[in-house]
Image 1: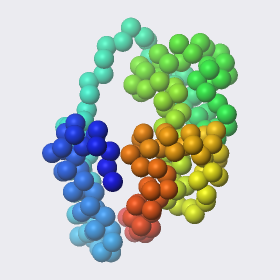
Image 2 (image 1 turned 45 degrees about the horizontal axis):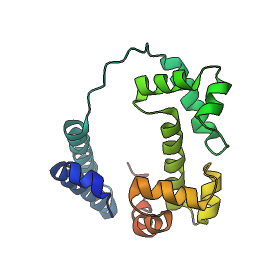
Image 3 (image 1 turned 30 degrees about the vertical axis):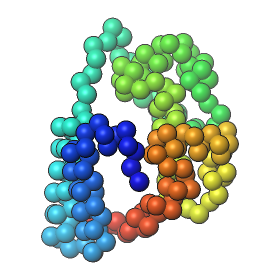
Image 4 (image 1 turned 180 degrees about the vertical axis):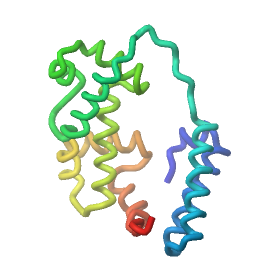
Length: 182
C-alpha cells in the first residue's frame, strides 16, 4: 500500500523508485552472487539518483546562523531517549535554549521542527519493532514514546497510509530477507 499524496506528487518518479526497490528485493531473494551484488548496487545508485532528481528541494535562505553542534547534540539525545516522555519544550529546557531557538536551529539544519524530528525517530523505531518483532501494538507504542496505541495509530497512518497492524501484515514478509551477504 502506498501513500496516495506522495504518489500523486510525482507519479513517474515514484514508479521508477518502486521498480528499483522491487528489483533489489527480488535480487536479494534470489541469493547473493558477485553479479547480483553489482546489480543491487546499480539499482540502489539509480534509486538515489532518482530521489535526488525528483524530490530534492532547495533550502530556503535563513536569517539564523546555524549551530550544528546544538542540533547534533539534541539529535543524539533524542535518538537515545525517544521512548521517554520528552517534547520540544522539555528538550529546550534541558539544553538551556528557548523552544523558538531550538526550532530555528532544527529548521536551519534539518528543515524539520524539533517535534517533527522526535516524531519521526519514534515512528522509525515503531516501524522497526513492527517488522522485527511480534510484540503487541500497545507495547510498541509505549516503548517508542507514544502515549498510547491510538496516538501511534494516528501518527503511523498519517506517515505510511496504513495502521501499524496493516503495515506489519503487508511488509513483514519483505523484512525477513537475509541481507548479511552484502
